[in-house]
Amino acid sequence: MATTKKTTSARGSSARGSSTKKAAPKAAPVAAARRPVQTSAPEVSRVRFTPPPEAKASAKNFRVIAIILWVLAIAAEAAAIVLLVKGETSFDPPIPFMTWLIALIVIDLVLVVIGSLLWKKANHLDPASERDKVKFFLQTQLGVIVAVIAFLPLLILILTNKDLDEKQKALLGVVAGAALVIAGIFGIDFNPLSAEQYSQQVEQLVNSNTVYWTPAGGKFHYYEDCSHVNMSRDAGGVISSGTVEDAAAVNLTSLCLTCKKRAEKYAEEKGIDLTPAPAY
Ligand SMILES: [Zn+2]
Picture 1 (cartoon, protein in one colour):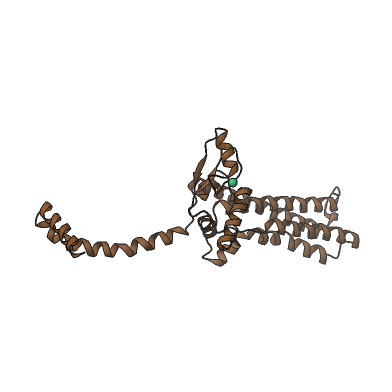
Picture 2: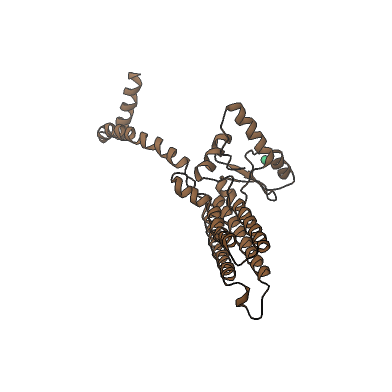
């Protein structure tokens, strides 16, 4: 051991001259100091999900449209409330009061649901970080909060209104109540995706952050030798690969079922917890 060190230093000094004698002892502590920095850096970046610019841009567009639709939905609710409070007597000539109210509730519901679908789509393209639990909950479940705002005040006003007869109250109550439930269900993200989960799970299962997709397929694959990938390749298709984020950028946000089953089998064998299941 000692002899090898001596010969290498002797070779170095003979080749580069006396100046290397000063440089050699300096180089060793620098290399030693760099090592801990290098090992900690990938651990931090490993769980960091950075969507590509295209995915972020389309997520932003979806969010803007969702908010506009939600504002219009609440405007429809406000119009319904005005109609309910004023009653049909304020219209000249008379307008079918019940028809108008139900139409406004339906418009409100359609706008809220479309807004929620776009909002969830945006959250899957550009997921929120789990580090801030409150922000994560608000961002992933905002559709539910909007559903409550868009229907609960109207429902309360219908049920407490004294000018409506029992029949009208029952019908409007059922319509507004059903709208609240439907909007609430569409608002919930049953499988909220976090930036950390997405990257982590893929890495656990396939030991790298690479996924594959075919030119025509609507889903991405964990395994390059998945039967669907092989079929496409045999048919002359060019197989693309990249991170899950890259796949999301070309609108592939769900995992192939064959790969899913294979991954689940592998996870069971290796004892990997698949409960977050974000990519499904
Ligand atoms: Zn597959």
